[in-house]
Length: 81
Ligand SMILES: [Zn+2]
Image (cartoon, rainbow, N blue to C red; front, side, top):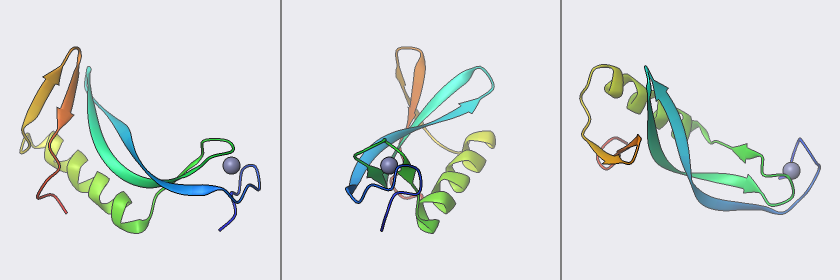
């Protein structure tokens, strides 16, 4: 695939930390996405998008456990998919 932003072809699978804002908190969710090495654009596949939606929903319903990392919360996503 080719990056739609910069046209680059160097796109790699990478684990990144997605930030979801919940009220005054920031929740960090580790996700595997494709990242353009040229401009840093992230490409989410359908499964990842869905997983993030589920995580967000569960955060709102307070169904997930968090680890406190300084001022941010890190969610454990194992078992979410
Ligand atoms: Zn790019």
